[in-house]
Structures are given as C-alpha cells and as structure tokens.
Image (tube, rainbow, N blue to C red):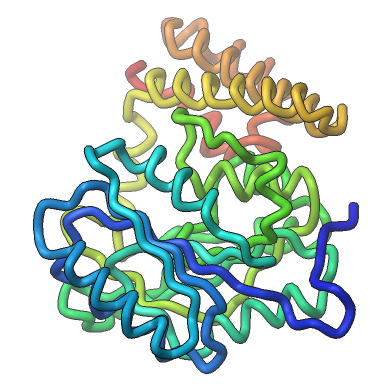
Amino acid sequence: MSHSAAPKGRPLKTSVVVCTYNGQAYVAEQLNSLLAQSRTPDEIVIGDDASDDETWSLVCDFVARAEGRGITAIAFRNARRVGYVENFSRTLRSAVGDVIFLCDQDDVWHADKVAVMTASFEHDPALLFAHSDARLVDQGGGYLGHCLFYALEVTKRELDGIDSGGAFEVYLRRNLATGAASAFRRSLLTMAQPLPQEWVHDAWLVVVAAATGRVSIVADCLIDYRQHPKNQIGVARRSVKQRVSDLFRARNETITNTADRLGVLIARFEEVDASNEHIDSVRSMRDHLRRRLVIGTQSLWHRVPSVIQEWSTGRYTRFGTGIRSALRDLLRVG
C-alpha cells in the first residue's frame, strides 16, 4: 500500500507532538533537546492538560524561543483536565507535518533523532511507522546500564518477524513501540483516529500501522528515556525466581482486558474495510484468549487435556510465548 509523501524534491515536513501535565521537573530539559536537533522540526505542537504547577509558564517561554528560531510552535492549555488520551488526541489533530513525532514531557532527545528517523521515511515511501531503541536513565539523567529493548526482552524472533513482513502479528502479540521513541506518517491517522480509550496510544498506532503499511525498527538509541516513580517499566531482566513466580500469577483479568481490546480493534478494522487476513488474525487471537479464560476456571486435572488441545492449534506459539504460555495456564491460580 502506498502512503502520502512530500512532493518530489521537497523534504518531508516534521511535527513534534508534546503532551504536558504537571511536568515542571523535567519539561524544560525535554523541550530544549528539541531545539538542539541537528535537523530541527518544522513544527512543535504542545497540549497542556490544565497543569497547576509551573509547566505552562515553561511551555510559553519555550514557544517564544522556538519561534525565534524559525520553528512553528503552537501551544494550547485545556480549561479543565481531560485526561491523557483526550489531550493527546486534541494535540495530535493540530499537527500538520508529513511525519509526526511523539514526545513525552520528561525525556531527552539525542541530537540526531529527527534527522535519523526522518531519513528513514524519506528513503522508504512504504514506511508508515518507525520506532527506535532508547537509553534508560534515572531521575537525574544517569545511565542505568540498560537500553529499552533489553528491558523489554525483545527477541530475535520478533525482530526477524518485523523485518520479514510479519510485523502485524508481532505487534498484535505485544507492544514493542514506546510512543516517546516513535514517529509515523500523518496518513496513518485516517485509519487510527479516533483513538480508543481502551488502548494505550502507542500500542494502537503501531498495530494499525502494521496492518496498513510497513513498520521499521531503528536499532540506535535516540532518546534518554527517564525512569521515575510515575514512569517505571523496569530496568533489568527478570531473575529466575521472578520467572518461576510469574508462572503461578493470576491472569484472567489481564486476559479479559486484552480480549476486550481486540474486540475494539476488530470493530475498527471492519469500519475501515481492512484486509480479511488481518481481521481473521485478530479474531483467532481473541478466540485463543477466550479459550484460555475457560482453562483458568478449570481444575488442574481438567486443564491438562484442555491445554493439550489448545496447544495443538499452534496458537500458544502464534499469539504467546509458546510452551511458557501453556505452562502458565496449567499452573496459574486464576
């Protein structure tokens, strides 16, 4: 599928979308890193969700400095707090660039981020969504010794699947794209908006993109991704003890929520006339999750044949982590 691109000979225009809320501790450093880009963005749109600290004052100061650098800078402040999803949607609708970058209020962009990622879109007209790795740093900006993909335990199987045209099922299985490290063509919004409340925005955007066009991973770390109590993903791989404990953890609530989200995705795909192949994949995963819900209510002795039967479908591997997912269903408490 082809996607809208800049007219031949014109560089792609870039927009950065920033959502803020009571971010006075870090927002100035993040915004300053946008001005330090080797290829400065053409537009920066900031939506503040009724902050009651100094965030709005810092944003207004930044807008004046950005405009002095020849950058189109737009900032608006909600009269009352509307929540992250709605604030993000409003801010996103104001961006007009060919390529839109998502930006958190508390990270720091490396100086080559816009240049590297925009070049990926300019060199590949079929590319719809790209995301990079990120350095994990502490509250003070100190390197924690790990990068994002390491912390997420991204596998070679997943990377190979994305590179070989199987990105949709990779991102359907789990989200690897962090919004703060992501960029996409504005044409994606035709299918992705309105953003559903049931989904985290980056997970929604990348799975819709993978169903519509090509998704690419930039292996370089292009941001410092700050870890603090309000934004904590975990910075180390799980220990053996944690992995064993995980096998027994209750999962029915998580599985139910995931199945409900897949229902939202199916409805959107049907609305926009997505391919039957992708709709069938989502339905198959939802059926798998519903079967797992039933298994979770059974006694151990009844679970064994049920898990064996579900294993025979191949869906534990296709939509989960294979034997580990099957073991969880045998051992979990609910």
